[in-house]
Image 1 (cartoon, rainbow, N blue to C red):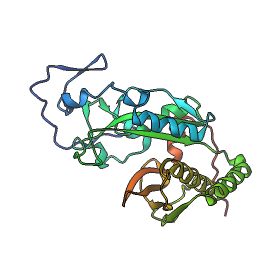
Image 2: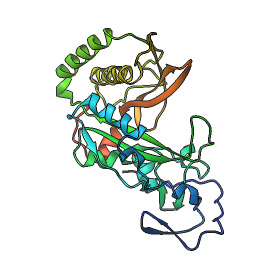
Image 3: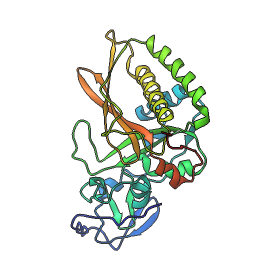
Image 4: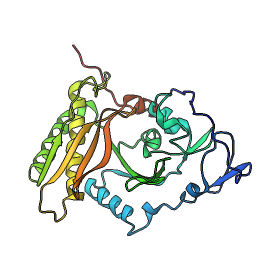
Length: 290
């Protein structure tokens, strides 16, 4: 695993309200000149509303688990306190990535922070041997608060590994998902394309990677239809666009046309081989032969 030096903007001055330490989830952390977390943010830690029965987030999570079935492992809650290495380095974030900045993330001190995404646990989940999994958690970012942004929000992350010797099964599943989607009242606008700006990974066999990317799109389109179609008499509209994430390639963002406007739902992509390597996951992706 590569360990990179973190680059911060000028240190945020420690609030006079803090003493020499901060208590989060019963553990004390020393304050230093990287500390920029606020008492209000800490008050949200540990609420775990996604685990409360009948809470909207919990209901949504249950619907997603139900859609994918028991074949996917439900990963239990993890502490939102992580290291910058977990949150960034293990996922190959560049040293100068904006997300590392104190203006974007909540640092408890130089060694600890609140996770900014569920992917902070991706390596450890793969390391435990999970090949298909779903994980829901609270995440924290220093965003401007508006109708679609808050300091604390929730993500559900899922992953499935397909081995190189499973391509026949993968093709059959793609055919099944495609036939299922063809029966749905859905319009899919896909402007994404694999190319220099959104490439396959060089260590992956091209046909295998393309089948995996297709499986990702078909799986999510079917899920989105289940979640959003409801009693709407109009066809459901879904839009796929190219994106960039340090820990997937190719990468995509997905939007749904909901109540008269495009709503960003998620980001996704083919897991970076470096993530799997950091987890010690034994999946072979030989390069394509000329």
